[in-house]
Image (cartoon, rainbow, N blue to C red; front, side, top):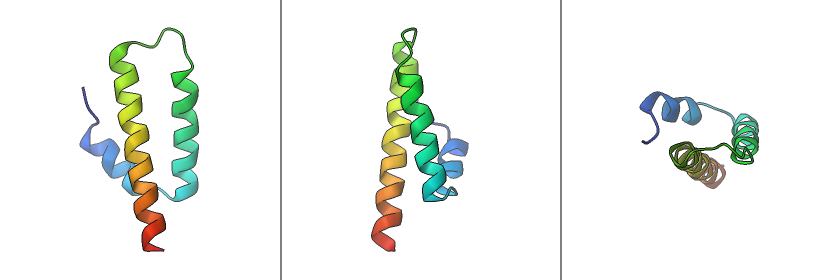
Length: 61
């Protein structure tokens, strides 16, 4: 489990509006009833990463 380095690099390169769109799609996936524990863990880690990047971007602006 965990988030791949390429995904982290992709998120770091995104604009804030793109990050918000990605977060929205992840939240929609979390609403699925057939989500496995591993999928859930990965999605939560991605949301956490997006949150940290967003905080970092807003604190530097």
